[in-house]
Every structure is written in structure tokens, then in C-alpha cells.
Image 1 (cartoon, rainbow, N blue to C red):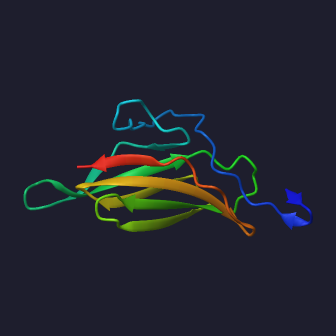
Image 2: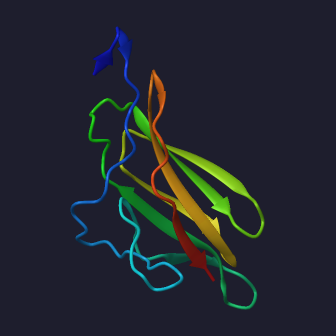
Length: 130
């Protein structure tokens, strides 16, 4: 869509409509899933000497930008206690699988982007990988 001859930026990724085959992780206070993003069950990727997983595989999915004016998506991940920041570009795909170190609480945010810039961030999703 164009406004005043300039390309409009994408809107924030919208809430999820179809949640089949997805497990939404609840908030810490047990109030339920975050709208717009979801995490599939995590599976251990590798194990340390004490047989605890060193990394876990996370599958994050979201609904496409409703404007249809998107070139791709970026997922920003922050390790809450370490302050480690990760950025993943999924291109036009509305899903991303990543392996993250265990023993950490992570925050996930998704943005849509195009030639005009980035959308506002999605709602933040948090999960603990212990």
C-alpha cells in the first residue's frame, strides 16, 4: 500500500488464527498463551556430562503480516539473565526453528520488514529452557 507516494511499512505480525499442532507456553503466572506467537514443544539437541540438555530446539511460529506488504521477518531473542542477544532472519517464512542454550529464560519478539522499514514489534513471548 502507498501513502503520499511512499511505500508503507509493514504492520506488526498478527494474532495466530490456527493453533493446530502447536503448544502455547503459559506465562509464569499461568494466565495462558501470548497471542500472535507460539512455541512448539522443545526437544533436547545435545546433552552435557550430567545428562541434562545443553541446548534445546525451539520452533517459533506466527501469523503473516495482514498488510501483505512484507519482505520478511526478524526474530529477536534475548537471554534474560545473561543479556545475550540473538537475531534470526526467517525471510518470508512465518516460522523459525533454532537451538538455544538451556538454563536460561528467553524473550522472543517478531518484526516484519520491507523496503520502507520495520513494523512495530509483536507481543513479547517468554519461555524458560531448564
